[in-house]
Image 1 (cartoon, rainbow, N blue to C red):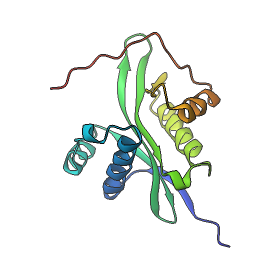
Image 2: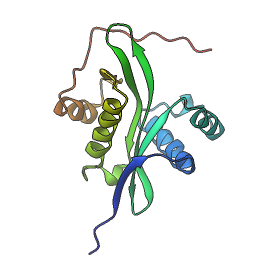
Image 3: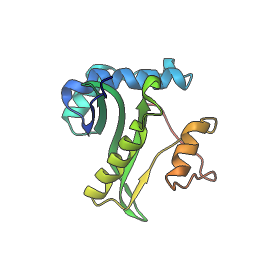
Image 4: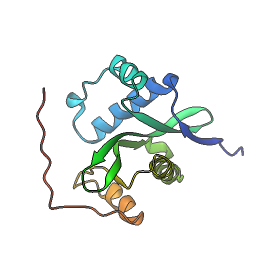
Length: 150
């Protein structure tokens, strides 16, 4: 039996359709597909403008997971990388790809001299919470999210 070829690397523009598809799968998993309105054209425009970066995991040249993130700023800590989405196809979970992607994200934050990384996780997503806790994350429960749709 052949061992699959696994590569974790920064995303290329040509990966955006696969990344967009993974985000759609995440929206379905989170029972919020109708809220997923960013088009593939939006992804191309914003990737080209360096609004976000992405790291992908490939198995035999197929994108099966990704972390999408962007630089932001903490007035208390300084540079911060915000992890917007983190997805691994269900068929590829438990293969260690999630850990490899998360480690690559943390390495990128260090490379960019960030002092903090941040993300959100749904309170009912126990597998994700356990994963983050295993990675020594602090899961805050006292801060409330605010937002306005424009």
